[in-house]
Image (cartoon, rainbow over all chains, first blue to last red; front, side, top):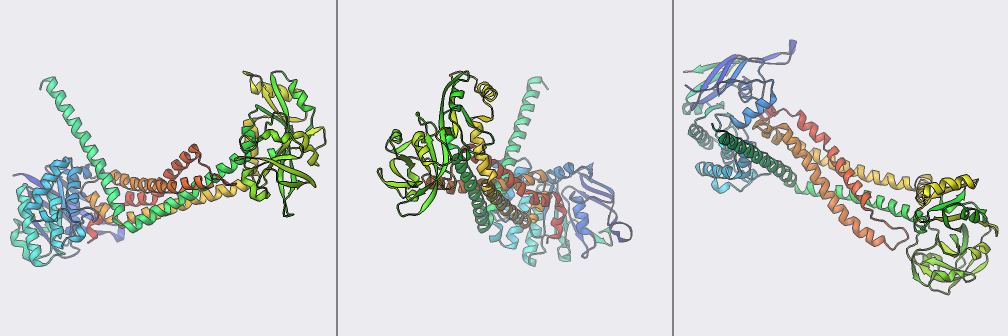
Amino acid sequence: MNIKIACRAIGKTYGEGELAETVLRGVDLQVNAGEACILLGPSGSGKTTLLSIIGCLSTPSSGTLELLGKPVDFSRNDESVRIRRHALGFVFQQAQLLPFLTAQQNVVLTAKNTGLSAIAAEQRCAELFRQLDIDKMAHKKPGLLSGGQRQRVAISRALIHKPAIVLADEPTAALDWRHGQTVIDLLIEQTRDVGAALVVVCHDQRLVPRFDRVFTVDSGRVIESI
Amino acid sequence: MPVSRRWQAIMTAQSQVSAWQSSRLNSVWQLAWTMLAHNRPRLLFTVLGVSTAFFLASAQFGLLVGWTNATSALIKHAQVDLWLMSENTRALDFGTPIPRQTIYRARSTPEVNWAQGLLVSWNSWVRPDGSSISVQLLGLDKDKAGGPWQMQEGDLRIIDNPQTAVVDELYRDLLQVHARGDTVQMRNLRVIIGGFSKGVRSFASTPHVFMSLKHALLYDQRHRDDEITYVLIRCQPGADVQAVQANMRQLIKHVEVLTSDEFAERTARYWMLGTGAGIGVILTAVLGLLVGAIVASQTLFATTQENLGNYAALMAIGFERHLLTQVVLLQSLLVGVAGIVIGTAGFVPLVWATARSPLPIEFYPPVLAGLIGIFLVICILASGLSLRSVFRLDPVVIFSQQ
């Protein structure tokens, strides 16, 4: 078994003293290579906080996080940045593409930052765009793309460097049901292709059957549904 | 692994790192430029604002250079080593009479090759229409040192003729003389225009009137027949000018002896700082720089604020903070360089257009280079607020920007 993500007793508390608010309480979670997981839960349940910790964007108040079999040292910012750059791929709710770059430039820029040469990045980008059926949109800026097309570009950006882990925060929130399904299917398919572990934060129960594992976050605790 | 293969592996790894660094620099450039160019009206406004500020500052400094040169041009072109004058002379224009015999005392100082007198005084020029203006009368000794260094019409030696003066062509209209042979009056005495010099400007709109020392004394009330204003001194070839200066100070009491550079600097300093004229110009130039800094700062800040979400996204996907600060710094430099190029494109024609005016704006490469340096530093400093935003940005905000 190839464990990509291992959360051990992760806790997260915001503020101190009387104002302290605990968002996560002793979260244990393990995701293996090639698995597609969905994190469900009502708004404010802590699922995005958990995703931000797994994404090395937030520091847990307690517990440890292991990515690719190694504990993450949150005190070292350079290490967090390196992990995010090489090991993780992100898909955000609103795609968060850079509006001043074309779809292709958005993806290639990310690839070059991970160390891919420009030629290799462009080739891989073209391949992803073909697979995601947005190859005709390569030279358009995000403002000229539909919500679904933008999310496909965001998926390409997340997968361009073949990361071991892909994290997606509400990737279908801005899309209608039909486009949402397509995006999730593509995300799962592409992630499996690169053998990555996928964690998707979502609150749309209809998408559950598409995932290998389902986790529900409630009142700061994570429960896996069988 | 054999050593050669290991060495090859190290070299390959190094070249990969270097290619990565170069690729990241390209990314910084791409991000900086495309982010700026995305909002074209704002970029245009910024570049216009910054270039106007640079133009204003360079024009003011050009004016300062022009004025400074105008105040000390006669001293610099006199081609003498030392100037002897009464004590506490503030500037060339405000000399006090000294005995003519000082010329002979200067000549008798060891290692002095040549010494002649110069009279500088104020006078009233009555124009043909009856109105009068102040002029600066310069009485030149035998070799015409301290006089105009180039002529447009006529020969300077004509001032050896009685009642004959040379004035500069720039002041033809002001003095209301247009051709050789025109006559006007100074101190109720006739003056005949014998020629026109070229490019000999004076400060404060008081044109120079060049006459021979002998004839100038007839027109001047401040100097007695046995008085002059300055003694101009040339040392023997190879002599140590400072040593001659020190020696002369010892031998001739109650006078000051300055080198040409010292006297030029004192004169320029008096006009620029002593009268406050230069301070006004410097203040305007500083205001220009300040306006440029504010415009650049505001726009860069607005651009950064507008793109904070994008910066957060970039940080979230693994771009280091220092790479993004480079983006902001590069943007400020791009705005600065564009402002300098356009500002200079406006400044150069201005230099050309004022070259033949009494108040020229002059181009002096070291001043312009210094101004460019200061301007770029100001642009970088102007990015301070933007950098602060990027430094304080927590990439986790990307999840709250939905």
